[in-house]
Every structure is written in C-alpha cells, then in structure tokens.
Amino acid sequence: MSALSDAAGQPARLAMLLRAMSGVLVLLCLFAAIVFFDPNFLHPGPMMAFVKRSTPLMILAMGQLFVIVTGGFDLSVGAIVSFTVLSSALLLNGDAAGTWWVVPLVLALGAMLGTINGLVVSRLRVPSIIATLGMMISINGAGLYWSGGSARGYLPDAYRVLGRGNLPAIGPISGVPVAMLVLLAVVLGASWLMHRASFGKMLLAVGDNARAAELAGVPVNRVRTLSFMLSGLSAGIAGVLLGGFSGPSTGVGAGLEMQAISATVIGGAQLVGGRGSVAMALAGSLTLQALFTLLNLIGLPKPLRDAVQGAILIAAVAYSALRETRKH
Image (cartoon, rainbow, N blue to C red; front, side, top):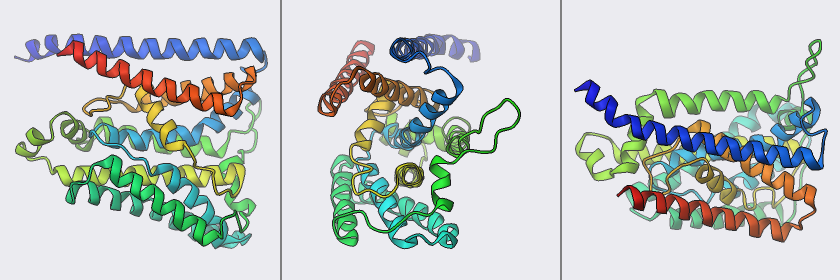
C-alpha cells in the first residue's frame, strides 16, 4: 500500500520540482538582465541592499500564503503596514526608550486585526475578499484620521535599526542587515508551521476541501482564523521593517497586498487553495522584486510598472486556472 502511495505521489512531486526549477530559471534570467544594465549588482553590497529591499515583501508573501492555501485572500495587509508605521511614529515621536513596548504593541495590533478578519470570514461567512477589503478601507481611514492626513511623529534610531541597520562587520564579511535576521526567524517559523506541524496539513486540507476536512475532524473555523491572524502579524512585522527603512509615510503600504498575492501566485500557490510552499513564495517575492529592479533600471515610469504588475498577476492566475483545468 505504501509503495502504491509513493508511486501515485511521484508525478505530483515531479510536477512540483519542475515548477520550482522553472521559477528559479526565471529568477536567474532576471538577475542576468539586471547585471547587463548594472554589472555591480552581484557584488556583496548591492546584493545585500536588494535582499534588504525584498525582505518586507517576502514576509508579507509568507503571511499571505497561509491565507491563500485555505482558499482565501487578505487585501488588508497593505493597510496594516501603513497603520503600523503611522502608529509607531505617533506613539514614539522620537522617544527611543519607548521602542521596547511600541514594537510588540504594533505587532500585537497587526495580529489582532488579522484575527478580526478571520472571525468575520469563518464565523459570519463573509467572503474573504469582501471582509478584508472592508478592513483595508477602515484601517486606512483610521490611520488618516489619527495622523491628520499626513505623516506625523518621528521614528528614533533604536526603532529604525530594525529596518535599515547592519550588524558589525566580521573579518571579510560585511555587515549583515538586521532585517535579514528578522527574515530568517520568520522563514524558520513559517516553514515549521506550514511543512512540519500538523497546522500546515490542516491548512492544505481546508483549502483542498473544507467540508471533507470538517468531517475528518479539522477545526476549519479555527484554522481559517489563525491563518488570517498570521497574515496580520506578518503585515505588522513588514510594517516595522518598512518604517525603519523609509520612515513614516501615509502610503508606505499602498499596493503591497497585490504584490504579496502576486508573489505567492508566481511561487506556484493555487488561488483556490490546497497548494503552496514557503520556499516558492520566497522565490516568487524575489522574482517580483527583481522584475521591479529591472524595470527601474530600464527607466520605466511607475504607472507602467503598475500595469506590468497587474498583467503578471492576471497571467499567473490564468496559468494556474489552466493548469487545474487540464488536471481535471
């Protein structure tokens, strides 16, 4: 029986490996194109800067992955990022001594907002795209009201070191960004939850067939709520890093929700749920960030970059749907 199961699973594993290889190939091609325009790109300094810029998107994509594999969407993460930055600046207002309690507070706030999303979706049966769209509008309104419509307050260096600081250089190794250590911690936690813990199996089961998962004893409502909580927490972490990197801004999170969704879809996640991996979500994030870097080097205006991002999302979703149609 075990041999038959392994044999049946081999085509699926082979297909996943081929998708991973094709994704890595696209990423390498983008790197090659960037190096053509900027030969210094692969040097340690520029490469570290690229990874530092990519870190918030990678963290958001991992959080979004938990929701997408259950068959949902979280459109509120960009608003949570903006609210995290604005609230941090207003609460701190330059007081470095307050960093130790403000950072945990805004992370807890992100997790709480995500939990509210999850409860609305799982308990009230509101479609996730509607529930999180409403949350996005509410959070943006609350942030603008609190800040008076403009970025106020000041983020001290003790806070900003999380987003833009580097560790001291050790011998030939240049200073590693602090943001990369945060990313490593999130990757380890997300990978364990998704691929090692029973929680990941329950997420995939809910996304594959929620009714069957419920009959099998999976607490579907709790799993969905926790997935949104993790997405909100990831948005809070990304907000802290972006606030440290670029300072307070009312629009720092604008559009990040679509970038996170695009990254997970490019990484092979199935929008109807039931499939996705942390490693490929990270690869999708790097691919998207590499594409943005290339478009910047080419000199493409931001409106056209946004149009390209939309086209990529449509193409990735269409490809995913076509692949599922052929499977059935």
